[in-house]
Each structure stands twice: as structure tokens, then as C-alpha cells.
Length: 144
Image (tube, rainbow, N blue to C red; front, side):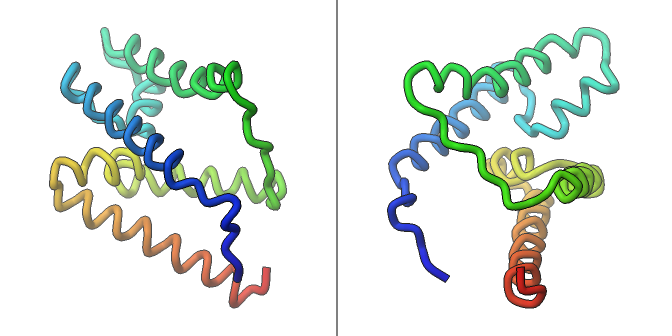
């Protein structure tokens, strides 16, 4: 395995992480809501009265951000070695996992850990552990 040092972007990564943290902090301080993407999107499918506007604004912001970035800099090329069926199955498994885990990596890993939630620590460790095991199996045992 080789590390692509030309793709190592510590400053960009640091800035992105800081922006994610700032956005999560502003959302919880401004509205008392957790910036967990699965919960925000899930709430759009079972809307409560007066609870839809901020969710739509959040999702529109997520979708608009790369478009705004594209006005100032070139967007990276999209590359996937997986086929459509693999991506659909993976997306469905992520959806099922977020339901079983009562949240996603953004809700537990960013917001929950920042609030020192023990449940979020366990969930984040489970996410990371499952990811490590999956990469090991796919790259070393399955020979992909």
C-alpha cells in the first residue's frame, strides 16, 4: 500500500473540519438541534408541524455548498470503482445502520462526541470498527 502524498491536504482538511464544527455549533446554539444528517433528512419524511423549514434549508445548504465552491475553484473529479448496484446496496446498508445506531457519523461522531455522550462514543467506535473490518476484508481477504 502506498500513500498518495500529493493528495495529502492537511490545511484544507483542517479548514473543512473547522467549518463542520462551526456549523454544528451554530445549529445547536441557535436552534438546539443536532446536526445529524440522517436525523435531519429523516425528519423530512415524517414532518412535524413547523419543523420542515430549517431541515429543507440545511439540506439545500449541503447541496448548494459544492456549487458555490465551484464558482471559485475547480471541483475534484468524481471517481468510483464501484458499480451502480454496489453503491445502491451500500447506501441502503448505511440507511439501515443509521436507524439501528440511532444516528449517523455526523450526529454521533461530530455532535455527540462534542457533548461527551457515552452512547455516541460507543456508536462512533462501532462505525470506525466496522469500517476497519470492511476495508481489511475487501482489500486483503477478498483480493479486491
